[in-house]
Length: 349
Image 1 (cartoon, helix red, strand yellow):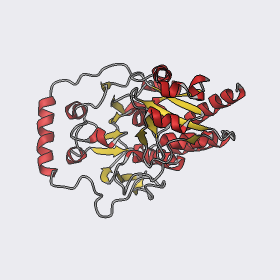
Image 2 (spheres, rainbow, N blue to C red):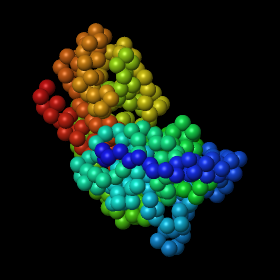
Image 3 (tube, one colour):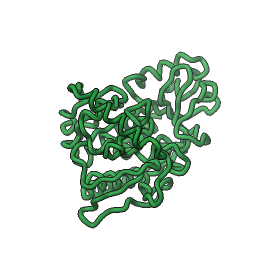
Image 4 (cartoon, rainbow, N blue to C red):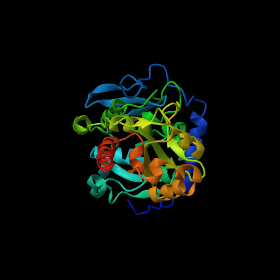
């Protein structure tokens, strides 16, 4: 997905039309579900399932993060924002319906590379609402709530006013009534199932869930009782995986005890001094283009507080690609890969 898509003319006209629709629809509540709305997913944070008609599951009404959307048929024109959303669509075999993507967190996995090769890229981060509307999508699928905001690609009320369905990954919901209390693989599998319903790819979703459940069951967690730090980003102050999100879920499946598990959040800042106090046996380094694993190692070794840690001195590092660190189709493969790395590390001790 390296080709940059540049929208044609019509942007001013489309934007003006969108603004007019926002004025008409702007009095509605965009944060709370309408009466009778069916919540998304079926995990610990969002029990239930969408209401579906008798004809191939459509018309379909879904509610994500408390915002309701309706689809009369499987969407033929889809825009995704964030790697987790893009890879979900690709993994379910609907990549040929992607008319635009944005906010890539890194390269797609090899098994999806061919499907992603010709998908237009709208922007490195959040696209403008004009760029999205120019493509006349039927569905905008986002990995974060903030992707569909005034500061992002436009409010969800604007899109619904134009008859465009929106969907946000349930794991990313911020409202207390909608976010998972603690992310589980059932939550991830529920989103795959939900996305399959939305895309009209129920069989593909069921097959993928079955495949991933089997792969996860085949992983043998470490029984060594090792503690670990999930180091995501930051040089002055590490930004780390906390106790309720994908990092915690993945580390638990690998058999590692998260040193920041006591923080009731998905991510948190943890000073180098706090890291040293918790003295992790292993450090999981998130590898991203903007903050590589190598850069994090430099930061750990340059700081006198963490440089003295046995994990740093003995270079007990594991690495994981950033796109695999948010809830989505790559979480199970991240468990498999980290478990393999950990077994190799334990064997060398």
